[in-house]
Image (tube, rainbow, N blue to C red; front, side, top):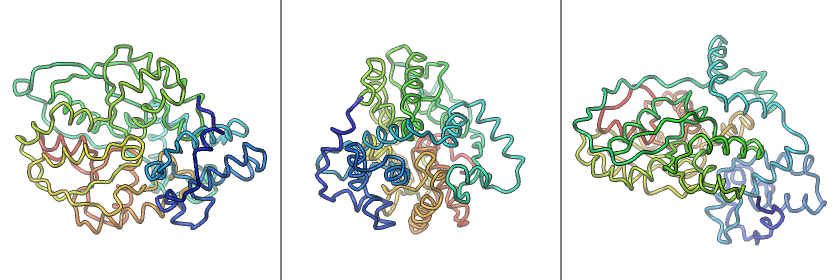
Length: 406
């Protein structure tokens, strides 16, 4: 595992990061900037500050969007500093409510049960009591809901290319439960470029744990995932946060199994573009709609995947893709951030929804489940007639027609 103190020495406090940081822009507080947080971490390591009393709050306020890492000219690995420092804090004094939430989210059967029980409660918001435990603030996020079925017709094998390979698809935990239509679209698109999905009993990849400082749990979940997909096949991921974590595990944990797992992890847009989907899209019926694209933080900043989705959208007949102002700025979902820091998350959401509204687009496309649910909520609250689609859903719609709802 990297040395936290050594990582902090790479920051030269140049300030290029601060204007890219949503929490600094919102507050103007240096301690809510990346270089301010790195200074706090280094000072705590040196014994000049206290981890719990002086550092924890400012790290918890960080969205972890990694915009600072993209802006940094010195190559500071802020993601590793952030995760290792949070792990240090959690090891000393665990946030038990957050740990319990992660335990539910990472277990599909338990999550399904919680959703069923939650549906009995009045209103749409998550329970106030839960929000108070997690954040001390009133809730802003609605209870999650499972996607509607797509209604897409069965694939016509006669019109598909010959099978030329297999891949694994990360089923995940929350993604599997809440966004089954995205997985369906991904499987269909993979088949359209000649790949089938090899089935395997998988579980959580540990991304949410890693982003929240539970590194021991993240490592164990990642090792378990690696063992469940033993063949050396590509692991296609359609969740930006999961893909970012999986690609980083090799460097973060430096275990042979996880190095190999990182090397075979690929985002769905990367894979589909590489395997020729753009050519197939050019001959598809297309999507006659005005759309805009939101760059999920852990796709753009964490994985550097920016152009690939746009290249695929450019191949969709009839799609009018209009630019989104500040498309790369975090929407405020940030894993479970909208549950642990609801007021700041709400501020980020309002700015994102305002920008989407200005595009006058009927569709907003994105590549991460947290962004999907949070932005859809914001659009619904504003009564904007804009549907939210995952990249895979939009691309499959070019062949099969748009799925219902958002």
